[in-house]
Length: 475
Ligand SMILES: *Cc1c(COP(=O)(O)O)cnc(C)c1O
Image 1 (tube, protein in one colour):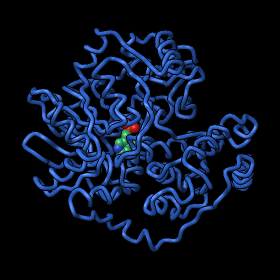
Image 2: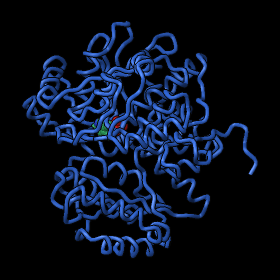
Image 3: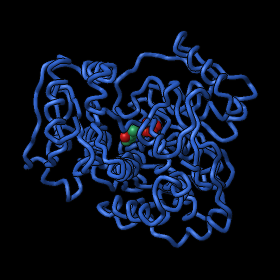
Image 4: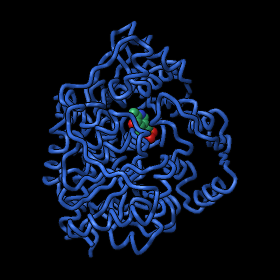
């Protein structure tokens, strides 16, 4: 097929997989050489482009920011309609509203989607993009995932009622909170299948890996994933950095962001916004005691430690997979160098970059950590000062952002990655206030649940999936 001149191409961070267009990258997830896809060149926004976005509603701004990334895979009008539809059901007219906390500190609320966390902002787009691309190809896909509770619902909401997708989410039976389970199991859509596994979250993850390693099963059911390394998620997240910057004076004034960070996907989208020409002074990374990134920015070396559970579970992560994308740029886009660094990291649990590289990173990034006690104090402090309730992840971002930002005059935007009612116990402990679920979820405990309980047995789980995929016509 002739390559369209405006089509964005993507290369693997390890340099050995074939370059792909957006459609290929969307469906592939991970590259065949084990790397992650990144754009071959960064699209750029002129000052005029940025100024022209100031008056746009969020969905239109987001479509404009993402357009160069999807170019070649979906037409402009179709894409605008898709983005408008994705954000139509969000419960705030501004989609991603800014709330002022202090004279130069803002909160950007990214919890107005169906599952009350920022992942909806990308996944609502990604589910629709899958549908669009698969319908054109006349194909279907089976999304499988495992969750400890906090992320499964975002994937389910992204895939519900999508014609070309079946989704199966495994969770450990009896080990996720009632709110989290109900957010998944009360979704009444025929293509959504919740499976409670008689085992732990690790058992669920092992089953998932085994299914992807079972090539005949994987191919027969056309397994796919919507995990956080998918480029489409990064592209969609870039939009709210642009929206915040434009609202606070870009291109004429720089802005800094504070981002509670786990897999490095969210904050990497901020890096992309800066590469596109948005004036971003600093990106401040907040960690909980699982602080591999903070230790890296302190020392220049990344070393793996066991995960400890915290009150900010979406950041209880050992290795931040999207960091590889930053490393690729840092090492001069040399795929062999990235491959060698990642191989070494896997073999030894350690990855170090030189002094010059870490100095370069510190021009843009800063990082800090908060333990659970300090996180509760941060929630209480903001509540005392402003009346605002923060979820534990958001509180880490706000507190670390205030502590680690440099004195440049750039306003700070702290990303509120979850609604406080998603983590009610931590919020109530810190403030004495029990955060209420938004109206549209108020009847969550009256809704009917649908899920199957299965033993921790690969053959049983595969049979279950195969039977249901056959019914929907894929296999
Ligand atoms: C997923 C998540 C994070 C971490 O985001 P990454 O993109 O993995 O860095 C932070 N807060 C909340 C509430 C999340 O759900």
